Structure formats: C-alpha cells, structure tokens
Image (cartoon, rainbow, N blue to C red; front, side, top):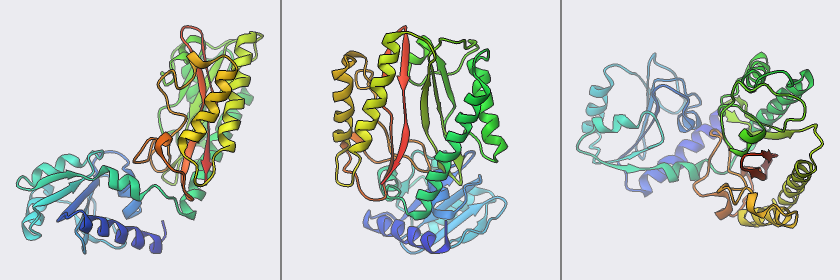
Length: 336
C-alpha cells in the first residue's frame, strides 16, 4: 500500500461512515490477520484496533505502531481506553466489522447501537488497484510454482498430508506460506468431498488427486487447483477433459459487463453436454468461483449475481464430484 492510495482508501471509508450515519467504525485484529485492518493501515500485526469517525482516525496497537493517516495510540487497558473514546466522541451508533476477531470489543461500548458494516467493507475492497492486482498475480504465480515443484518431485508413495507438507515447505522456502486457506490434497473418493482435509492415505499411481492451495503474499491470496491422474479409467479421463473444457469456456466469457451467471452457465453447458449434469459443481451446491483479494473469499454478493467490472479479481473453478468414486477440479484466478 502506498501513502497516496492509503489516504484515499481512508477518505472513501470515512465518507461511507458519514453516509451511514455512524458516529464511529471499529475494525481490528486481535489474534490473526485481518483484511480490513491491513487494507486501511498497511499492517495487520495483532493486537490492533482502528477507530474511525467521519473526520478522524485512530490506531490503537501494542506495541505502538506508526500507521500513516492515523493518530497512533499505545493499546493499554483497552476496555477503559475504548469507553473513554466513546464518551469523548459521543458514540451512540457504532459500525462493526462482524467478521473481525476484534468485534467483541464493541461490547465495551455498552450504550451504543451496534451496526454490522460487513457488506460496505467488502464493497469498498471489491475493485483492485494496480498494486493489488500485481500482488494477486504474484501470489498466484508463486502458488503455481510450488505445485509444479511438488509434482516434479513426485507425489506417489507419499501420504496426502505429506504432499500438503511438501507444498507448505515450497511456499516457506520462498518466504511465504499457504495461509490463504488450509491446503487441500485429496485422492479418489475423498476428492468427491470438494473441500475435505488431507489424510494419512498413501497416494499411488492410478489415483486421481485434487490439489488446491493458495499462497498469501504481501497480504494477498492465491488460489489454484489442479487434478493429477495417470491412470487409464476412461470415465475419469472424460471427466478431466470435460472440466478443462468447461473452465476454458467460462474464462472466455470473463469480460467487463458480463454477469457471473453467464460464466457459470457456459461452464455448466459443457458439463451437461458431456453427461455430468448430476455430478457437476452446481449439483454439489457450489458456485463456479468467488471473488478474491486479501481474503480468499471476498465480495458482497455471490459471483453468479455479480456484474463484472474493471479491477475485479475472481476465481473460476468448475468441477465434477462423483460420490464414493472421485472428484475433478481445475481453478485459476482471473483479473479484469
């Protein structure tokens, strides 16, 4: 985050605070990375709380950190500090990021009305600037490099957990981590559960394996899925080919002005033509993809209900999931 776009982000947010009739907005990170705290302060090292009125901004942190554009305060006896702040600024209506692990602090301001500000915050982060797009592109590139190296070294004879560990090592050796989400490595019938957890199953040749991982780099998330298969099962090979084709069709539709549902429908059309209607991602209750940024799942609305705009970032990840047998998924990030 540069000084200039940080100041503009804060101004946009404070205009939203004013237009919503809020006396103050509370953001923060108690124990873990928080996207909004990072987005507006340039750092999300916990513990940190951001308090913003229509024309002032305060950063409480321990130890005291310098956040450009904020009045920086050392966090000491935060409950007392927050109640005194609320009294001084006459906070009667408090906006809260209910997704934050700092949301509990709103209850320190007992007399204020608490208002969820989640959708407004997601909306403000929806369009990515050039720096954000570069960070997303970098995170995705690093993610793909980690997967490619792990596959080159070989996954056969290793457990799903061991492969996940190798992928994590590849990210760590580059100075990052697979902290966008917990890595997914699933073989055969376990891959029919789209977002299951790796097990001690030892992968062997002829297994169909879904790998789905995401590096977090400079705060921003990668998200990449592939399906590995070297066997001769014709049904499975057909499914892999169909899902690849569905992904290509959806990606071709990914243009400014399109509806997310247009992309979904183009992918489903291919899968239906190939006979995978009843086991498609849609039949499994999944979306074609999701917006992505500082959080791996972003956006105030589901991708299918979103009109695509310049600066949006989202995934396309069609799949088929045959209960008790196998799963197939291919995924990449699209930047408009």
